[in-house]
Length: 255
Image (cartoon, helix red, strand yellow):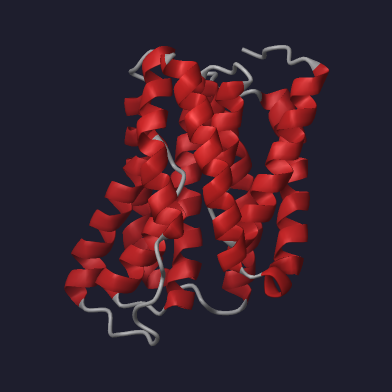
């Protein structure tokens, strides 16, 4: 299915993906902007999730390559977490597609505050990495990846923050290591979810490819200005904009 969008809607979506890429590169939470805007312009909720997942999957590859080049990826940890991350992403996506469009929209509205909380949570815990025990490697890591993979497939926004917090607190990775490993697991969950959406025909491929381009530009601009602006200011702006989106979406879906 490929719907025809009016020109002004395409312009709004392009601007939205630029802004979300900009914000995501600094403070995270870009998906919290993309999905509501898709719904507000009249796109079916499952297509909003699928198209956003496509752009998210491609956008994460560059960050993962950068972390890998700098030696921040623990491939042994990745080996035990990736299978359940993929399974979780598939199961979560299959689960959300069981609902009809109207109910998916209401579920998204219910989950938005959870994603907002995840993005705004402070990330101050262990400064140095701790030893990864066998129970952390063989049991806790796969469980974390399965649960957050399911959440990413079912909804998604804020999952990166959840991964960082979980890997830092439960596994004992430093924040930098946790952020790096998050890219590995999040790419796996996003790709598996994207694959299911694509197979089910729930992605606007034509407009989605255009939106990826604007998302990349936003990420480049945002990352270059991150040091000057700072994430705290961006988070305040993000909270204000998300509040407006939440109210608008609630009005559209329920009133």
